[in-house]
Amino acid sequence: MRDSIRRSRAALVAVALLAFNPYLSLDALAQAMNSNEARGVGISGKWRGSQGLVTRGPDGKVIFLFGEVQPSVVCSPLQVCDIELQAGEVVRDVLVGDTVRWKVEPATSGAAGGQAIHLIVKPSEPGLITSMVITTSRRTYHIQLKSHATQYMARVGFAYPEDVTATLADMNARLEANTIPGAGVPAEQLNFSYSVSGNASWRPTRVYSDGAKTYIQFPSSVSAQDAPVLFVTSGGQNRIVNYRMRNDMMVVDYAIDRAVLVSGIGWQQAKITIQRGG
Image 1 (tube, one colour):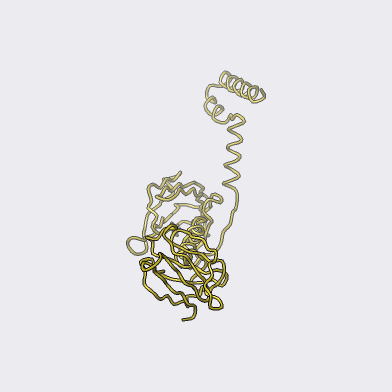
Image 2: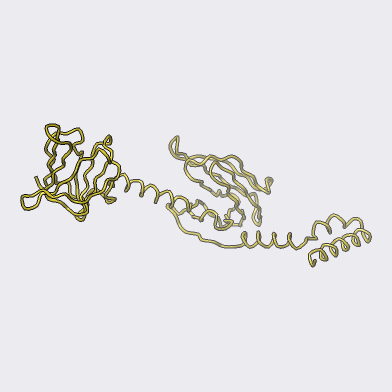
């Protein structure tokens, strides 16, 4: 209701201005904003006016955190500002508000396939402010450009939050690649000092322990129904123990020293002996 009243008042003011002086009509209508427009301008102004995080990178480069705020790059006449984008990023378009007094030229660095695009920015005079939008194959940059009589940022670059996520994902992938199935811990934390003797089509491919459990891995062709029975040797006797199958992995809930795997009966019986430390 209130917004409707405000819009009506703004319209009445515009009509009054038009009636009073037709030559002021376009300017008056352009300056009149409703509440949503004023709020939008305020939000954008707060984003553009925020300072954000600025750090020093290699070789004196000024580093902005991408996406945090609209970075403000200060340039100077007769000098060049080098805005470096992420290596491998392909630039689609570069749009500058003031194309008459600001010049932007592209350059590249690095080996083919991983080149970085540089935008060389040059103002024609001090005291200028404009905006620049860069669209690339990965993201869109919104940058404010300012010109100063003597001060300028020679090199500008960006830090990308998603790089941290990608690095962590890569580290996790490498850790998982070095993690032995079943145990869920790195290989260097496991004991592989088990010998396996005997012949059977299901002969284990490896046996190891994490100190709390023993893992017996069979060929991938072995199913839970075809798996042999496990006997643990203790005091000269073979005892059946509890275990569970996880696909081709037999998991025993404690570290065993000696065990026997048996499948079949009579002359068709197959037997495999497992010995720790052998």
